[in-house]
Image 1 (spheres, rainbow, N blue to C red):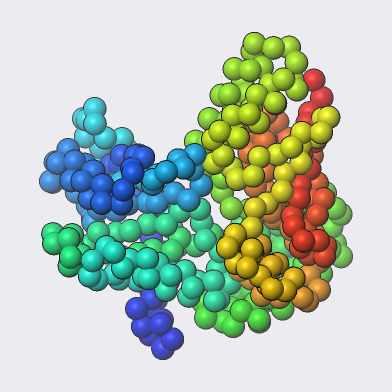
Image 2: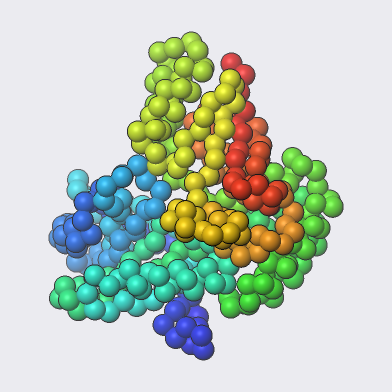
Length: 357
């Protein structure tokens, strides 16, 4: 655990090891229901099995349009017989965290503080956040640890570079990134990124670059991929036409848009365009640079989109539809970046080539 006392005295960086948890996955209408469900979970766990403070994970990518998609959990020593709760190993998490004290109504300001801090130093978020409940006895005097979950982009980059190019080449291309501290200025990190991409371009072909960068994308929820795949498989089983099954899957996505913007099919290709990261800022933007900054999801480049960035960097964004559609087909697919901000376009568009029958 590292406490950044000089610039942000309340923000801590922590690596949380994997832990066994008992949990409930819930769809809730109101935030206050979290504490009610937490009490139900607590009552179902023998006290001797509890290993840590209760928590709630808030999922950002979800089919739930009205309310909250949450996982309420409690760390435990070992599993026990139960028909009410489920069990899983919560994976290792890297977090920035801050303590919220007071009432729940002002917790949004605490979130803004920790998210602003993370983005200030170029750290992307995973597709969920977590709250650890340290003291919730009195509703107006709660103490909650709000956690920004870090998407470990550099680690993913290194792993996929080793997989595609080997450890020796990965070390040469990524030389220097180990020196970065958490609060290394964002501009310095950006300049290293551009140099690294230029070196990567010199020793790879287009296919290798796509394979490496697309593997660094945010993780799309597996349960949603399973949901889309079930729709596709059911449609495929009732029709000999692959396109019919794809169209039925697209229709389902329009009603359950957990994956963001729904692709448009043109023949045997699907075209999908990213929605803006900050729709209001995008709509209110007065200049093209302001629109691009509001559109882009990557905190390390969105403040530098007026500078030259190797366009293949946005293969990372292609990893999002790649996960969805390769999961649906259970088969590798060709995916192409048609438009991107790094190419000078006003949006990011990807083409998914459907497989042969």
